[in-house]
Image 1 (cartoon, helix red, strand yellow):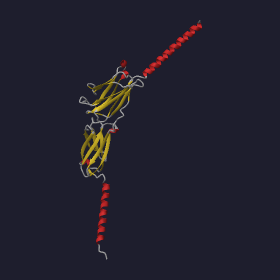
Image 2 (tube, helix red, strand yellow; image 1 turned 180 degrees about the horizontal axis):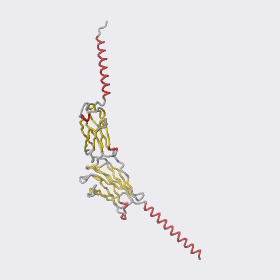
Image 3 (spheres, rainbow, N blue to C red; image 1 turned 90 degrees about the horizontal axis):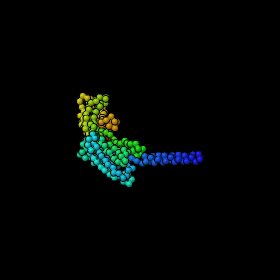
Image 4 (tube, helix red, strand yellow; image 1 turned 90 degrees about the vertical axis):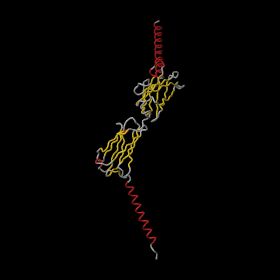
Amino acid sequence: MNFKRSTTSMAIALMALSLISMTSIQQDAFAQSQGMSLTAMADRNSDTITVTGKTISKITDVTFRVTSPSGNNVVGISQVSPDVNGEFATEFKIGPTWTENGFYTIKAMQSPQQSSLYSLKVLVEVTNGMAKKTLVTETNMESGLVYTTPNVATDQGIEIYADAVIGSTTINIEGTTDRVSQDVTLTITAPNGNVVSVAQVSPMLNGEFTKEITTGGPLWKQNGFYTVSAKQFDDPKYTASTEVDIKDGVVVPEFGTIAAMILAVAIISIIAVSAKSRLSIMPRY
């Protein structure tokens, strides 16, 4: 009798353990098969932001809301249905209501069982009605925890060029940057390290900037290479420089040695031609 009761108790215990294990497996499987991912893409100086993503909940529409950097204005809304694979996509055009400069928040939402796993957001920087180059993703599909990838579509930063006419007292500085919301500080340093000129210029909407610098005067007495530096931020990508050779306050020919060689060859050629001409006109006996 005791053996039967013991056998029955063991069977009940095994059944309970099996039920607990099955429930745990089902919960784990469910935990791994929920959530969504969201990606925002934009080209530099584009007026279009493309948003794509994927969701486990394929029967519920995905709604979008775009808010301004201050959070006070909703500048875009959209609603799409996921396809059979749970994938979805939409676009937002940067329009007249996008008046603020800064990071706009794009939020995607679904509402299966009111789960927070179906609400994600990404940030896209917009300046003067144009998007910065962007490729950023936020997802919680694998672990249930929200994970955001950094923006991997960063541009090259700032570049600078100095265009000067030989013998001129004017240097035309040209450059480009991918951050048009911040002024560029230009600094010109003499060969001995003294700062001879400082200026500030605002980039245009396409990222280009120009500034004309006049040489000469007591600060430009030293002969040699003057360094023209441009800086926007502390990031090394936003610091660039170039050099201009100055002598007696005017621009020195960049290819002076080559010019001298060409002149020397020209003189030798003239002498050779002249000598040959004299020989050809001499009387023969």
